[in-house]
Image (cartoon, rainbow, N blue to C red):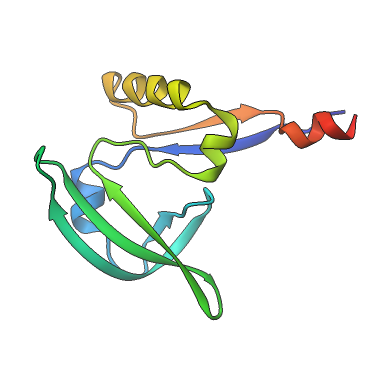
Length: 116
């Protein structure tokens, strides 16, 4: 029997980006919710989108950098393993059009197929 896996999809809004602080949970590059250890930068890009750079804990002596931008899907290894670039863009457009900030994808990991 093949086991289903869930992958988090998250689009931060202005409140998420503006208020992110040390100690909050943030989606790291691998798709895991991890504790924020440092805010490294904040700003607004040339399109007027607010963004924040941060680090999350990845173990006792390491950290992972990440960036949130208002209205943009957080692209993680977990997401790009499941969806192609075009599918990711389609999901982002759909979620923004329907004002969804977070959802899960239920899927069977490719490794389950390789095991037979």
